[in-house]
Length: 358
Image (cartoon, rainbow, N blue to C red; front, side):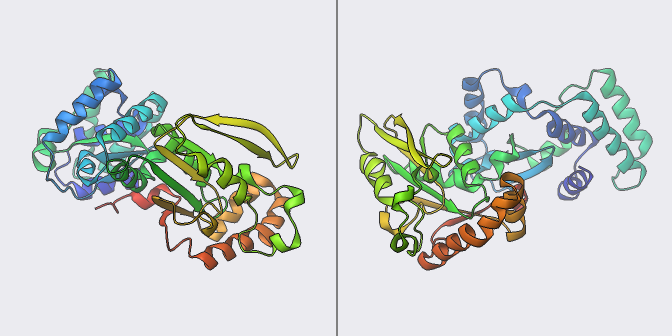
């Protein structure tokens, strides 16, 4: 938190103690105090946007600590829709907690930074401000007049889990504005966050989400000839017949889920027609399906982090199998068909978007 606090003072030299407290408050409690209803929140956002068109702030998305980011309303000028930004804001507010005890620790940090000469305020000055602030019950505060005049802040506070996919939200909103139906693939390395990205997108958009894991080959299909092919682990034929061939059916579609534990086809799932359909999982961009994707995303992670995640998720014995079998097969598939190069690459860490979205 200290690093972020000092970074904001460096970026915004007109920042006052009041603005520092606002930063710390938002990092702990989010911005939910602004919301009376999702509908009013959206109307307020749209009205505020009218005064921001044409502006270009230093950043569009920046970390404020505590698992929170500020996404500036100027992002709407880049293609992010007001509906999407408002949903991110509202969903963040619904899930954000925070405690007075943790907030007090952050206020103490502010005083320590002043005492150590790392911020342009005397310790006594900070303590006097905070004594008055505490006497009022530590309410949310506005930005100072100096800060507003210098930087014209206009943003919404959203959780890291949304901010890390900022680029994806922009691309999807741009495409939805142009197309009646949208088909998206999320491919990539195992343990790189494909399923997580799919769930996040599904929580924000009204969409269908399909999983390639539900279409693994059944044991009788794993012939030597099939398994020697690049990208051979998935039943492409069944996925095409049950999913892809019926996405346009207004009555919806039905497919059967493969159970990895029993290695058999299990229950059926019925979905309604939707203009936005997302497919997540390794091999989702296999050339067997043709050039069908409106957007392609590729989730990647460092090899070391990948192995650590697999170990934590699957255990030591399964890690060996991943290393010996599944990871090499995926790498062969990525290389043979240029999957990474054809996609928008999503490195699965929130830090990617701190100060890099110009």
